[in-house]
Image (cartoon, rainbow, N blue to C red; front, side):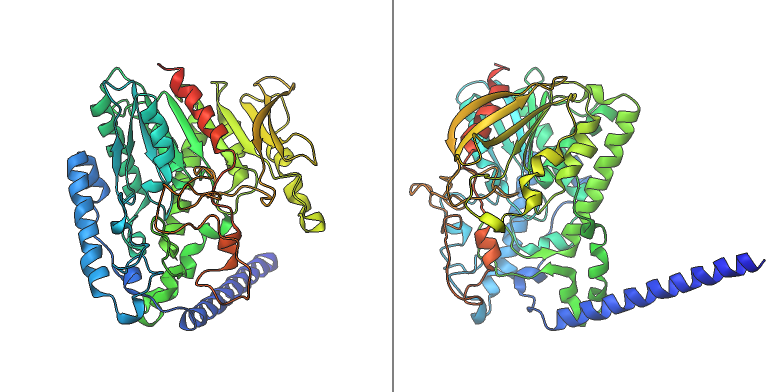
Length: 487
């Protein structure tokens, strides 16, 4: 009896301590909001978007009409009503700003389709990432079109217009938009042509979820290949509890608590501000994805999944790299899947500033050989060499084959990043060596800023993070192998 009272007392004390901690957290969060940046029109406006049920009943034409309504709402409620303080060349919503995407020859915030000359060989559905836009898939979409494939690139609901659109969207809406794009892909290519699913970041989770759903639902078209770039198979632990950070927003005076980041919007094809709901939906999507993968693997049903080719930087501050291995590749059958890792630049002259855990990231990420999947590491030919090589270990083997790539690490780059992988160095917006013919308003990738803190609109961290991939020619060639083999 005394033991029972003791346990009850400990439980009450634990609940009290948890309540006090939560109360203190909410007070601190509320104070942060009151002293933080003010919400602007593009944070408050929420353009209308179809629900998941409506998307499942819609076709591509209906989707484009709904997209037009969302962009028209953003123009009417934000661009046309800007306060004088918000009129700035650095604001993408200022109609006179060189960063306003409507001034470009192509507004890559919108869904698009690239079709080849003549009958299509196949069709690819390419899905962008969180806070992103179809812009991020344009280079791979062009690759598919060049090989005679149709490329269908949908805008995910809540994206492309204003950041406020992400405050009320659900991950099921994104998955329904992915299904709609796959239906359009099948319509354009016909029943006898192959489908490839290509996903970047959050889009990687969506295309993989669709492929898993197709194993459960015979009515869903099945893909012959899946390509993932920096896939969001798992997120950081903070995303699981991000909803708590938004609780003060239940009171109007603390509406800013609904945002984890309120940042000037100077990027024409990506939101800089980040709402709590986006983090929460990322967690819910990856939790559902991991649970379904585990269930199908336990039932021996992942054999029906097509080969998965994944490109991943060994250092990634956005997604969980270990989840890609532990929650996906460790469960895949021996079906020809491959994981390509981009190592850190071991020839970077950073001396003691280089973190020890980064130098061993590739070794720690991969499970011991032999493996059921092929593991490939793109790394330095030698510790002091900027030349890159591919070290490939076939499935079921512990032997490594090395091949020079004819590509070098830029001397000033010490690693890739989550956002860099789908962009070549020549990309007009994110490229380290932008092509003058690819004008996208302003180049963000080649800035080498030096000066005092607090002068720029953005943090120096965001400028230091590399946004293009010196090994994009290799990535493109590896994707092209799977396209050409299906001709």
